[in-house]
Amino acid sequence: MELSPGSAFPDLTLPDHAGNERRLSDLVAGDPAVMHCYRGWWCPKEQAFFRRLVALQDALEVSYVRVVSLRVDPPPVAAAFRAGVGACWTFLCDPDRTALELLGLRETTDTVYHPYVPAVFTVFPDRRIHAAYDGYWFVGRPTEGELLGDLRAIQRAIRPDWSAPTP
Image (cartoon, rainbow, N blue to C red):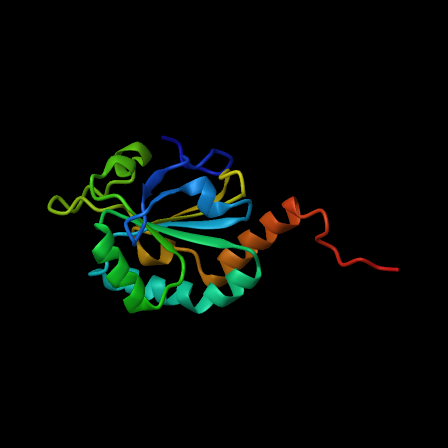
């Protein structure tokens, strides 16, 4: 599957951290989104990146931006990690690895747990990918500035009232 700028991120339906079936298009709900695929709670690189996202979550919330994280953990593990890092957004769970195979994001260097390659996508409300980041090496993940720049570009493109009204 092609997950590059301009292509559509699939409309996945998976259980969330509470075990409820959730559809990605419902989670995005007409707003720009950050779609984040991650290795696991045990990875120090993931913990560092989650700290970045958690630091941004209030700003993203008031900016009408959704965040969704995706991992192969079952809901109880995802819920515990979500609570532990202080995240308020939805974690989707793919313990059967069906989405992992569909997306083609299996990290091939881990032959025991078969996790996701760390990847981040900024997406338009229609799930069209604006930018894709390969986070296999930590510095390949987006910085806070890059995320905000991507989301500013998306907002500017979709919001007819982007510029403040003037007399």
